[in-house]
Length: 337
Ligand SMILES: C=C1C[C@]23C[C@@]1(O)CC[C@H]2[C@@]12CC[C@H](O)[C@@](C)(C(=O)O1)[C@H]2[C@@H]3C(=O)O
Ligand SMILES: O=C(O)CCC(=O)C(=O)O
Ligand SMILES: [Fe+2]
Image 1 (tube, rainbow, N blue to C red):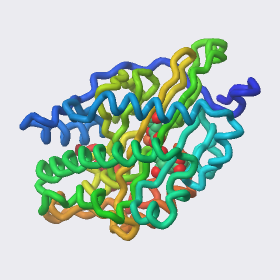
Image 2: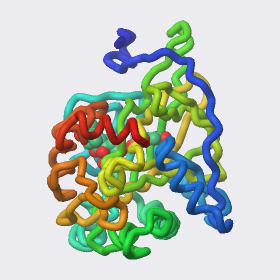
Image 3: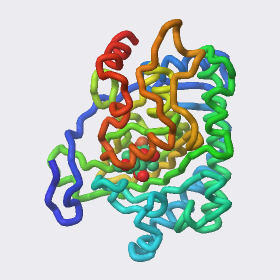
């Protein structure tokens, strides 16, 4: 239901209430971590990591540096947009008419692209912020690799690096996004409804790693289609299973639908690393995962094909359904989980 007030025109609202949920916690230094990770990926497609050893001071400095950009005058920021797909965006998300109460910077972290044309990979960014982003992405990628290696071990894949190599590869097509959801005082007039900051969607990549300030707003959708509020925790990193990992595990892991609601008082800043494979990589269930005689639920496709197709969809579309062999096969697998 769109609201009509000038500034918020066309941005959808939704029912504010959602149940708060206890998010599975993974302590990377504990021996049982891989079981907790795999269970969480099957159940919610979402978990948080503690004891990650990334400095809180560094995270606070980087957030402050990103905020310096968002505090620039709208005309100055607009020079670095609209995103194509990288750059600065305000309210408009993607190329197909989606909008939200959000502004953002979207960068490629593909080293190839950066070395050929840094300005295309990261338009609008100061040297200081770019150095911080590079350091941040390296640290978060390393953490994501450890997590993917634990998953490979737990699922008894043929090699521990079967998944992690895809995002550590120098051709890895990964990207990074900083989202800013300004506080929206007009929201109080919405009588119990919330304004969409970032509409519901799944992430197309393998895995996403999200860190935010201590502002609420992030929600995930569970297997019963109930929206659950994620209590904010600026000291931890949230992991989100993406569509590609769902395919690589032949539907065992859930690519989780999530969204962000705006708040009337507190602004939210989030940073997300989207770990994607090289463009030419085939996205298909990994050998070690499959039971004898088990067939893939999905048609064969490369990451390049999936990405192309994703950019033709609206944010909330079920992008994977176009690649399912049959809707029935997928439903049967989900029911058997
Ligand atoms: C509406 C869109 C924005 C998006 C590309 C798309 O056409 C569909 C997927 C969207 C998404 C969601 C997760 C990430 O934020 C993102 C960068 C991605 O890889 O897929 C965005 C895309 C975007 O904002 O460009
Ligand atoms: O900003 C957030 O907390 C989540 C945003 C998100 O899901 C995305 O950018 O894909
Ligand atoms: Fe997302």
